[in-house]
Amino acid sequence: MTKIKEASTNYVNKQALANDCLEVYASNIIGGQWALAICCYLINGKRRFGELKKCLPNITERMLTLQLRKLEENKIVKRTVYAEVPPRVEYELTPIGDDLKPIIKELEKWGKKHKAL
Image (tube, rainbow, N blue to C red):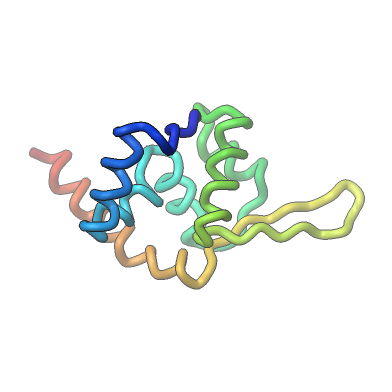
């Protein structure tokens, strides 16, 4: 997952579009196959890293880590570390992440309809 150079035309275009269209802004945060899938698995509550990895067998550990960090940075996911041996880390949706639940459910309904076409 490489970052787009801030001086590039692509970056400027993405920023302008995200500023003008809040739907694009939102899709930039939860867009992509992994971020939305992670949120789907966190809808029902807390999960540990290993549980998420089992839910998404085709994702690499590095990509899962990067996506969780991005979701945490965007305040969608909360990471809780417990002082235990071995350390236990749990991920859950934040209150703003919880607001995605009805949106994800609607996307699921739309996906079922579209897939049936």
